[in-house]
Amino acid sequence: PQYVVPTDKKKLVSELKAEAKGAEQVWLASDEDREGEAISWHLYEVLGLKPENTKRIVFHEITKSAILHAIETPRNIDINLVNACLLYTSDAADEEDSVDRGGRRIIKKK
Image 1 (cartoon, helix red, strand yellow):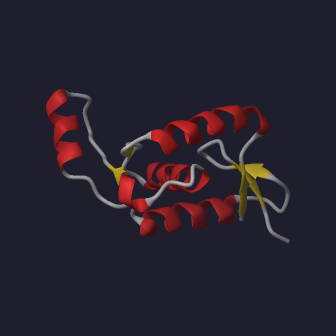
Image 2 (cartoon, one colour):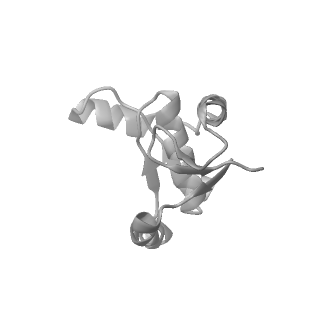
Image 3 (cartoon, helix red, strand yellow):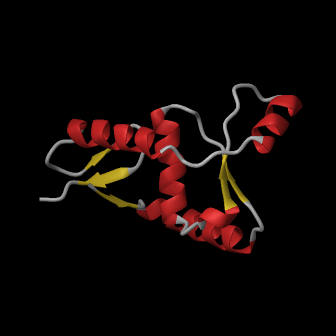
């Protein structure tokens, strides 16, 4: 599928790109499930992030110790989880434009 940033989110994406460009480090901290992994991947792609200054972290509670532990143990985006989500989303999409469970617009390639 081809993913398109919705018109009403283009300004936000531009702002995030500018912030990411000036950042020393970008932390992607979405849920650890396949949808969360796909969200991190989509952000990585749409923001044009670079692997050398992008870290993927996960935590299961919002406490100082959990967040510090996540920062101390970053990982890469798990492309297998991303692919599982994209395959699930692609299989579930109709031939027409649709929206996946993460709110992203999908245009099916014909």
